[in-house]
Amino acid sequence: MAPAVTRRSLLYAGATLALPRALRAQALFDTDVAIIGAGAAGLGAAQACARDGKRFVVLEARERIGGRVFTDASLGEPYDAGAFYIHWAERNPWRKIAADLGVALRDESSIPAGEWLSFENGARVERSGRRRQFAELSRRFDTDQSDVPDVSFAERVADAPDLLPGARGMARMAVGDEAERISALDYARLWSGDDLIAPDGYGALVQQFGARVPVNLNTQVTHIRWDGQGVVVESAAGSLTARAAIVTVPVGVLSRGAIRFTPDLPSVTREGLGGLAMGALTKIGLRFDGFRFGLPMNSNLWDDVAGAGGVNFECWPFDRNLIVAIFGGDFARDLLAHGKRAAVEFMLDRLSAMLGEDVRGAFVGASVNGWAADPFAMGCYSHALPGRADARAKLALPVADRIWFAGEATAAGDGDFGAAMTAGGAYLAGEAAARAVRI
Ligand SMILES: Cc1cc2nc3c(=O)[nH]c(=O)nc-3n(C[C@H](O)[C@H](O)[C@H](O)COP(=O)(O)OP(=O)(O)OC[C@H]3O[C@@H](n4cnc5c(N)ncnc54)[C@H](O)[C@@H]3O)c2cc1C
Image (cartoon, rainbow, N blue to C red; front, side, top):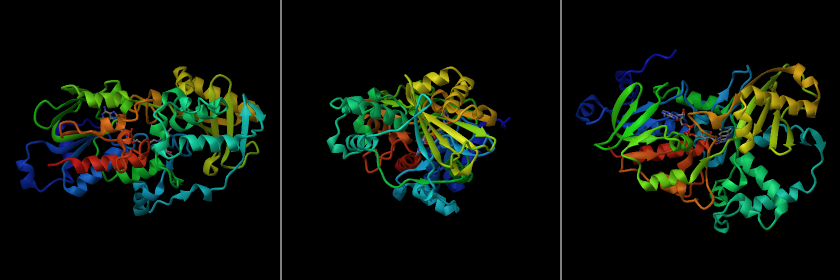
């Protein structure tokens, strides 16, 4: 069990990077900045506070840092249960952090590709015409944003019904949600660039970086008051006063009211929150005993499951004895609603249909990371609803110059929110919020 956090220890955790004692004594507040959440955004905010000589305290509900960047090692061989790609690496802060820490990154093209096999309900199918469809989907969705209306993914292909299945698949696997619920304009704004991979895990990289940041773990914030000067941040560990709060908890957590604000948040902030939803991209790690079913490492099996959606099975990543099942949308929500055990059984059935009955004999164990049901995530990452592409900008507006919402949902790059949804964007958002706090 983790040690109890007292108010004294909360203060102590921020003190290692504090202002000189004389200035501290004059301070009106326990600390300058209360940072809620120790994912990529919270760690970025802490690092920026430290650099600028601002006192800070980080409060994290989980027993670990990293949030949705998490390398799951519970099966004995690691895989990234959350973020995997270091997107648009040219400007992603995690690239420099990795270099500073001596963590090697790899270009995806340098990793030997295995086989790509398609199935429908377990039966092998050859896909024809896919290349043309992908090119057309890419033209409609990844194109210059000035050309994209603020309509749903589904509406974006309303004139070409043959593209709808592809648009649905893209919506579920890239955003984690259904094509009717995602703003095509919000998606088109996302940056593109080179994707890099941390072979030992993106989560492991974030852990290594965050190890030097003082964080109060197991400290769930329940209430933030901003009716006086500064803010009062309440958790089971006590209350803390600060000049400002940087709130990095996911929008799904905020939308369900897990943190109460007194007074209520301004209407513009609430409109911002109301215009954003969380996808349900989910990964299940399946460990095998070393039998590989004739598949080379880094093979992918894509199974279209009738009435549900597709599941991508990544086989033997980095030569590990793992198959990682990746799926999203309502299918993921429904499957996880039946429990983790049922979800694992479902995946073993799919694999048995594709690879044969040896699957169950070679199966060793599984771990399920159902982010949509995780109370501290409530989904994989945010997306704007159709017609609500302005939601991120609304949520990003500081509240009374003392509360900043910072995280993947508000990850603006040059004001265009192109860094949203990513761990790199989250870090940048946290860093920008910390810089904006005046003490
Ligand atoms: C399956 C999956 C695949 C992904 N793939 C990629 C990818 O390939 N590349 C990429 O860049 N991104 C990817 N992402 C998205 C990426 O993980 C997130 O965008 C990013 O990690 C968000 O960081 P954050 O700091 O904004 O939020 P989080 O990481 O969620 O951090 C917020 C923190 O707040 C804590 N918290 C919640 N409630 C409270 C509370 N009441 N009090 C205190 N603390 C609280 C949480 O425990 C958490 O640690 C993926 C995510 C998932 C789930």
